[in-house]
Amino acid sequence: MRVRLVATVVALVAVAMQIHATEGINLIGIGPVQQGTAGAGVVSAKDSTWLILNPAGLTDVDMGVDASFQYFAPVRTVDFGTEQEDDSAFVIPSISASFGCCQGENGFFGLGLYGTSGMGVDYDNTTPLGGKMTELSIAKMTATYAYKFGDSGLSIGAGPIFVLSQFKTDMAGSAGDWDMAYGAGAIIGVNQHLGRFTLGGSYMSEQFMSEFDDYTGPAMGPNSILSESLNLPQQLTVGAAFNVLDNLELVLDYRWLGWSKLDTLGDGWGWEDQHIVKAGVTWGVSDALTLRGGISYGESPIDEDTAAPNALFPAITETHLACGASYAWEKWAAHLAYIHALENEITATGGGPTISMYQNSLTAGVTYKF
Image 1: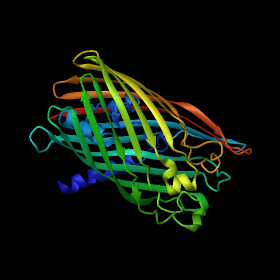
Image 2: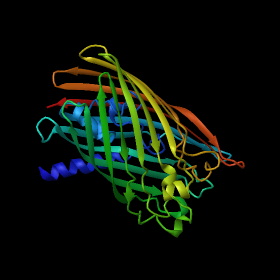
Image 3: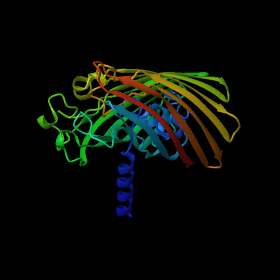
Image 4: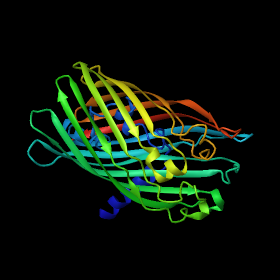
């Protein structure tokens, strides 16, 4: 039984890491419920996936397990005089659970394993950058605790985040084999319910990573993305939710991603911070059926001045449109979400390459309540 459990976890991690993402290198949301509102709703937890977004929300969800698979289909192109396209698609899993814990009815505990981040391409022909293939994939696991302060409406949650990252490339004469790195950070969140309003937010620390042994160092160049550890950025998300009716909720979020504060992506590759605005609506059509919609916008962390060195890391999508639905019965619920990222194109200054990307994804998931 133990061997089978360990094998299952390892398989989930391996699949979770085969992804490409959309807020820089991050997905805009985890699981179909978050994604149905384009990742908006930091103060409006609906299931256990919120422990990686705002762990304070665990006090507002039922105890249970949430699992999903996302079919993610980005289309990336690069034009160095001849256009090349990569339309490889990926399957991204997530699984998480929320439990009652201690302090009577006021303490809650959550566990989650997610594919959260990634980027890269695999073109047919070698580019002037000295390679045609890069892939960075990241999975995160977190264990969080949340506490509800009686009838005050205040909840606080926090916990560590453990990171497993893998990278491969054929740049600089590399063999293109996978290399692994490990890291850790932390997340803390707070919610305050005020009648029909809820206010709050969360902060995720920088996640400090070990080095990729096979790709880090002078061989990759003094300004290489892998000249040292590839840490992951701080993230601050604040938001508000308003129940217009008992069955109709509006949410609005602001998110800051601190790419420029990183020694690698920031100093090495010139990524700028992202300032992202998200808005979403959730409509409970009936006790069984729920519909969702949302939009997310944030300028690309890569601009014309940095497009050339980032041509094999085209993390440039900006606008995402999303919709979703859930159907619940007895202790079960089924969820679907669809996201379309509008095409964005950047041409490097000085006659450099043109890079572009658009994305489609479909996520399906289930919930089982204890």
